[in-house]
Image (cartoon, rainbow, N blue to C red; front, side):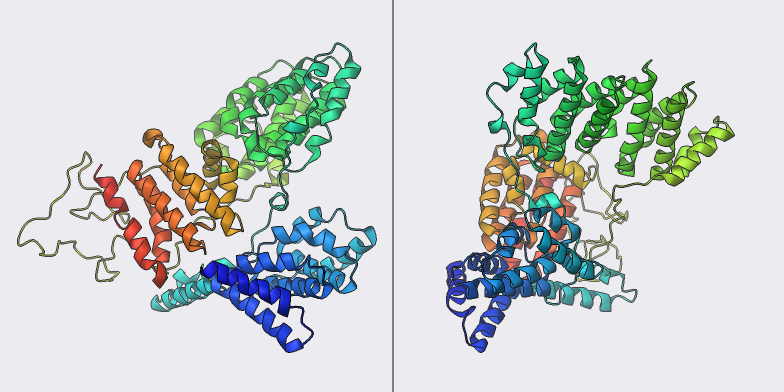
Length: 621
């Protein structure tokens, strides 16, 4: 009922008040809209304002754009979703009404303050004259740090809690993350683009033509799909048959022009699919490494572009066998190009992926090629070793270089200095701000943070505390202090966000994953409904509880502002805990977020009722 009222109020404000001739009426309409945003109704407000931008009355359209600009300036891009606005910017900038165009220009500049160069990819259809004007304005604001000046009620409560926690601790460390919600992370331009389905657009005679003995017909077939893969974001689907056909051209076609074309098309598909190219990555990279024996420059360039585009969908551990085999190839071109690819791959690899075992395998092979007669092979090998040194540090590489002569060692160090690691390496996790009761093992029911001997209260006479028998006996607490009478859940490796995304893409449909983060609550509601059905059908012994829980908790997670969606998210976590084995690692993620919800009075009872027995239920297994 409340949601309908909010929609009706905002609809009335947009249609009757926001474009009014009286300045006071217009100002009140904007202030009510902003207040609705502050009380967590920003999705409804933005939906109505975006509708209003297309109103036939230019006064209403211009006023809605101006209100959106103000909302974005005050609350920031983490509250005001820019994607649906960006889609309309080009149209608004070319509107017939001057006021609409002027307001659209101001909105465009404000969006640029928040998301930067990512916006320019959506302005390709804007007239050159106008684009020059916008570029001049962008230059004026590009060095400004965009920060919100107004916050949602939930953000205000969190900030107050953080301030209180910081005041309660002499060192004040717990307050360091207090303005976490104010920091605007970089936006991937692809997040602003809708995926395109190209599989349905492939000509019916494509595969027949690709098998033709006439190279002209094979070329026509490739030319027909070349424009399709230029789309920056492709819809996921079964690309198996297409990849197989392109791989055949790449490896077996005698016409070098067609080989280069197939490489370019693979590049487009790999970039468009991103991580979803993973099922085809290994077979394609193996074929490309072998094809590096080709000497034609245009072919080698296309192969390099293809392998670089494919690499983000896989990792060095999965490619180990193929790369080591290529480094051992008799052909010097294959060796040099493989070492060169390895150097580029190191710049895009998280250091933790390159463990000691993997590092030893690659360095052993590279040290061998470092002594090859061919100078190009030696240089590429030195570059790869130097880049690895920059990635993991000289301390980890030096033990492998004890037998390398001084001249080559200097070359490696020179390459190390020149190497640029392009992947962002996240800093170690900071402790969560003390916005909820501490999870530390030293906290007792009385709220004291001092570690005390754990004794059971005399609630059952003089009986000794009952300890449930397990195979591990008494476990240690997270602070390593022994706590009698407590049994810890089993632990597991804490998966990286990239691994979670990769495993989730294998388990869940793409529309569910994207729907969980949809800016529209209706999209999120549909996604959690579907996810509940999927979770109920997954094999309990599949060992994917961490993946499922962390996908549910992924932004907005339990900070979801819609009560029904939040209820579903908690229900899903409850079902996971009931049906599947859950570890202390997963439990920590769930309980820390749930603990924050206990600060919201209206949600407290619900959270406790749904999740308070989550760890205990696991121990009963």
